Every structure is written in C-alpha cells, then in structure tokens.
Length: 389
Image 1 (cartoon, rainbow, N blue to C red):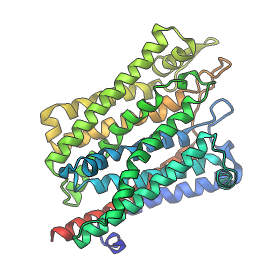
Image 2: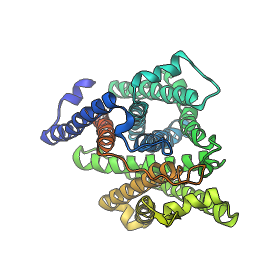
Image 3: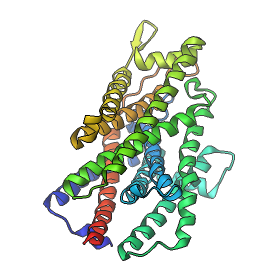
Image 4: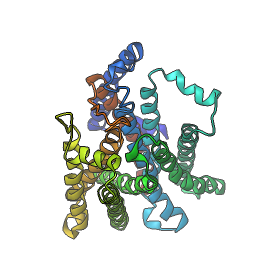
C-alpha cells in the first residue's frame, strides 16, 4: 500500500517539500545542539523542562484522544465511525513518534535513552512511560495496518487483531495517566502536586485529539474528497464539547484550591500565569499572553462548536476546531508545564525564554509529525477511494 503515497498532485508534493524544508533546518539545529549541548536552549537549573517536554506532554494527549474513536466503534459497535477510526489510529502513530523525538531532543545526548533499557528502574515513572508509549505505538501500527489491509481486500479483519484493539484502549488511558504521574509525583513543585492532574490531562486529551481529527477531516474533505459523514462529525463535536467542559471545570477547581485555601505555592503560579507575579520590585509575566490566549481561543472554539449554524458549516467548524486545539496547547503545553516551575521551591523566580535553535527544532519535530501523518492519510484515503471504486 505504500505505493499510494508516491502518487499525488502538485499541491501534495509542495506540501511535503514545505514540511521537508523545516525538517532540514531543524536537523541542522539539532546537530548544533548535539555538538554544543543543551546550553543552546533556554532551559536552566530552575526551569529544566522547556518546549521539548511541554510539546511532548501535549502530544501524548493528542495520541490518547484517538481512543474516543476506537472505543465507540469497536466496543459499542457505532458504525458511523467506520471511516474515521483509521484517522484516529494513524494520528496516534504520528503523535507518539513526535513524542519520542521530543524526548530525544530533550536528552541532549540520545544514547542516554538506552539507560532506561539497560538499567531498568520499575520504581520510576520514566520507566513505565517508556513501556506504555512504545507499547501504544506498536499496538496502533499493528491494528491500523492490519485493519486497513483487510478493508482494501474487502474482507473482515482477522479475529486476532481485535485482541490488540481492545488492549490499545487501556494503553491509551495509561499513556496520559503515567505522563500525569511524572508531574504530580514531584513534591517540590506545588502547582503539579495534585491528584486531579491525571483526569485533567485525560479531559484535555479527549478534547484536543478529536478536535484535531475534526480539523483534518474538513481538510481531507476539501483536498481529497474524503467525507467522514455528518453523523460521525456531529458525534465528534459532541465528544469535544463535553471533554472541553470537563477540562474547564477541572481548571476552575485549581483556582478554588489556590485562592479559597490561600495556599501560596498553588496561588502564586496561577497569578504568574494570568496576571503576572511581583517579586523583588519586578513583575514577571512572560506567560500571561499565552494564558489569556488559551482563554480567548478556547472560548471562541467552544462557541463555534456549540452554535448549530457554525458547527454545520465546514469552514466555521474547522476554525472552531483549530481554535480549541491551539487553546488547549497553550493551556497544557505552555501554561501547565512551564508555569509549574514558577516560583521555584526557594520562592525565587526564573523565567524561561526559548532560543531560536530550540524553536526551530520544535518546529522541525512538528513538521516531521505532519509529514508522517500526511503519508499515512494519503494511504488511508487512497484505500478508501479504491474500495469505493
């Protein structure tokens, strides 16, 4: 089926070339970082996780969000998701690969990741994160490819593959649960020290993943004549709306804990994110625009998805899905991860500013992910058109 990825119009090849250019620039920047070290990034002793880990955290949720298509289709036999379930499985593959690339970039020296294999430490969340991420990647590769092959041959998938499909569902939950435990298991960072982090992560994942699939399905309908169907689209919109409401509710609980209980460690981070924090006669507020950007974009996206007219219009549906997706990235990828470092356990403030080299590597990883996703979707859409013909 790979031959389908080698056929396309000029726009298809221009898109791949556009992504390839950013991949090449990012590769050069990564070589610079590899030779010089992580001193080329904006990370420091106080802010030891930057753009790499913040994007990793968000993309784990995007990968996990695909389960909201797998679960209704395979467990509840919801046939309306028949055409788009493969989109969720292939999105999970690209997202996990991006996660792994961000981890490699954050390590500085990539050979360090072999320490997790050669010196396993089951009492560490990082060990279990490696297990669930690679396991979920393998499961989606097996399930996606076998089921797509069966669809191309117009036969039922082999029964053994359903065993892996069912296992992939708890794996999807576990990848983001374990990622949440990486944060809420750190007692020195009060903002992260909350039992609600895992459900908050899952709620945002179940909104962000389907929102991206909604956006992509609108694009595929326009450029590849791939129609997911109105029933499936409406049901995905419903899933996104409810998940976004739950995520907003969990965020409000964080404000309640911080301000009603007047806990300084919790309250100060929220103030830093939304109003800026004064310390030593100086106001630190570099994340305030991103935090309010999350509020504005999420509100716009939520409204566009709720209003019957706009969610029935492909253009407004795409705009709403994109707004909500970017808003959730600003919340989890920027606000939650980077904001959690301020203030540090000694009540000092160190702000984080990514370097150009770091930004280009981050863009390159995203470009690589979309390059892989484009190839996978080209194959999936090609098979769908072949079957219809």
